[in-house]
Length: 389
Ligand SMILES: *[C@@H]1O[C@H](CO)[C@@H](O)[C@H](O)[C@H]1NC(C)=O
Ligand SMILES: *[C@@H]1O[C@H](CO)[C@@H](O)[C@H](O)[C@H]1NC(C)=O
Ligand SMILES: *[C@@H]1O[C@H](CO)[C@@H](O)[C@H](O)[C@H]1NC(C)=O
Ligand SMILES: *[C@@H]1O[C@H](CO)[C@@H](O)[C@H](O)[C@H]1NC(C)=O
Ligand SMILES: *[C@@H]1O[C@H](CO)[C@@H](O)[C@H](O)[C@H]1NC(C)=O
Ligand SMILES: *[C@@H]1O[C@H](CO)[C@@H](O)[C@H](O)[C@H]1NC(C)=O
Ligand SMILES: *[C@@H]1O[C@H](CO)[C@@H](O)[C@H](O)[C@H]1NC(C)=O
Ligand SMILES: *[C@@H]1O[C@H](CO)[C@@H](O)[C@H](O)[C@H]1NC(C)=O
Image (cartoon, rainbow, N blue to C red; front, top):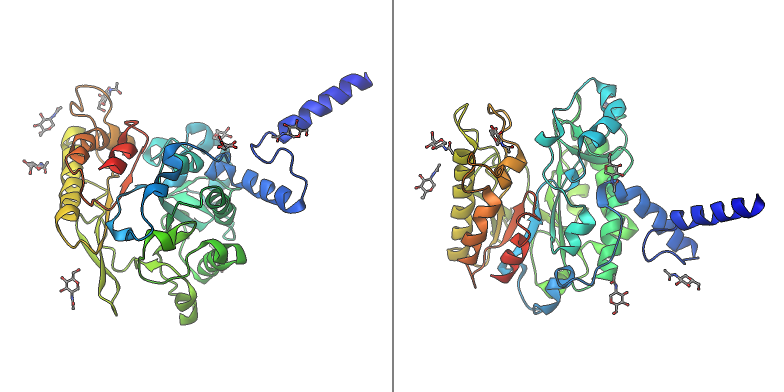
């Protein structure tokens, strides 16, 4: 009986210590990190370093390379990767607190691989959407009305990125933070939200990993082992010192024209530093227009912008979003339908992602800039195709 109990306890212990690379740690610091990474897992995934070529693709690129000259794969709405019916149901009791009911999960879901898988697969730009939870006190991830986890906070997830950079010091990460409005009935980027984000992004750990330069992109050598913040938020409810003290490049929401295929955004007026952005995310065609026509519109906007990147303003940032939806259409175009089609004669040429493969191959040797994908891992050679051009 006792022997059985001991065996049972031993196997329990093994299960509890199953997270890779921490199995034999003894220091409190290591155990504390392990705890934070477990808290982060619903958003970050289960931590695992990787020796895959894609996990350190920047290693072979010269230090002197300018960031704005690089082709860098990214993901739109990174935190939606596990938003299934089961996940939505498991969060119903929390979202119900403010009386809103999210639409079916496929309206919000834009990815199917975890953030750690994204990192190891070569993704370096992450679109992260934050807001307070329904208790109006904890900073978590949302996509519109879809709460993505109640327990994994923004700060927990930052530790996943920090740890990964320790394991992959040749790599440079770009984290885009945007306040997600239309979350709860009352959600607004008020002073408390802004203070919490400021605290998260300026903590001692954050200062160690977040590049402390402001409103400019430098070289890969300077950015390696660090996070460059892409600030799609304003600290407009706080004294001016906060905006002055936060590092990273400012893409003010006021300058980011909604649903535009061609945004010219000056992020540093003193030095006239400009970014060119395509963010035509809602194709919003005539009601009843079919998916293949909506995919064609998005494909056109995406490729027109990438073509601009290959031919114009070589020293400016180009940031193209290949992600889109038209969920108010009948039938609705989900992010997945737009990115991948549905494999039938209804979308004979596939979705935006399949169509981008031959297009990207034609850009070989050219600068295309940052490109943000939905369902980045389909087709499986999409990221590799962007990296090889
Ligand atoms: C943990 O330590 C034991 C005993 O020293 C060893 O056999 C095992 O391989 C170690 N596990 C890891 C993951 O390092
Ligand atoms: C993904 O969601 C399922 C269903 O809600 C859940 O059981 C699973 O633990 C989640 N995965 C992670 C890594 O949290
Ligand atoms: C990566 O390679 C090193 C050296 O060969 C090895 O010690 C390590 O376990 C590998 N890590 C992974 C995650 O495969
Ligand atoms: C959320 O908290 C802020 C103070 O931090 C308060 O001004 C606001 O009214 C609260 N909202 C709700 C719906 O309680
Ligand atoms: C700022 O830079 C853009 C190119 O990115 C150029 O077209 C424009 O003329 C410049 N403006 C000034 C005032 O130098
Ligand atoms: C997309 O662009 C092609 C080539 O410029 C053009 O022939 C086509 O009409 C455009 N289609 C849509 C739906 O915008
Ligand atoms: C593809 O989408 C169309 C339009 O919504 C639908 O009629 C068809 O059943 C879908 N096919 C599959 C296999 O999902
Ligand atoms: C989609 O609609 C366009 C415009 O009405 C039409 O030309 C095309 O044939 C339709 N495609 C499919 C696959 O139904």
